Length: 221
Figure (cartoon, one colour):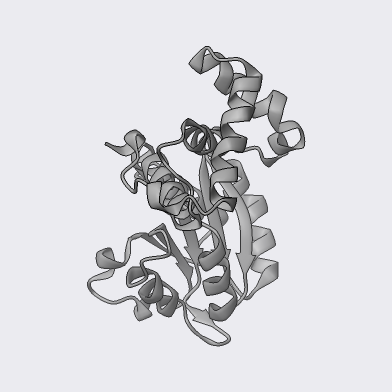
């Protein structure tokens, strides 16, 4: 599943493009909408996306400003970009360097936009998306202070990835049954063992067990 952000100041167009095209593509899940550069950068700093639908002319700047910020930021995952704009002349000649995989005019007919979007989405390498998410999660957990020598830290990583793979935040409503239980079956461990390991790993942070942190977890070796 592709987690996507729409950056567009015209909310009437957003509603239209969602209803006529994007919602017809099964692999795309729109989780956020930003209406200007500042709002988009804040959302991108707090979340990770696989894809951005980007307008170029925004109230507080050029959509390309967002891509430039992402390009040179070590904290923001590099998403693919589909430009949806009536100002395609603003695109630089080296647009491929900005992860722009497609440029589509807003004024084109709905069916043409749909076909172009579908073609663009099919270009995305799904195999790399999950690895990128995994690397980001590992980085964030390490930054928080989780110790990779604890099995519980790996269980936390697996839990986050399980929720991502199923694209269902509602799994958190009963995380023990919906997430920990499948993981316990995979590892042939009891549910209690999974929970205890996760608690032990989390408690290590509280106890400032920082000297034991291994920043090259086994899952990425």
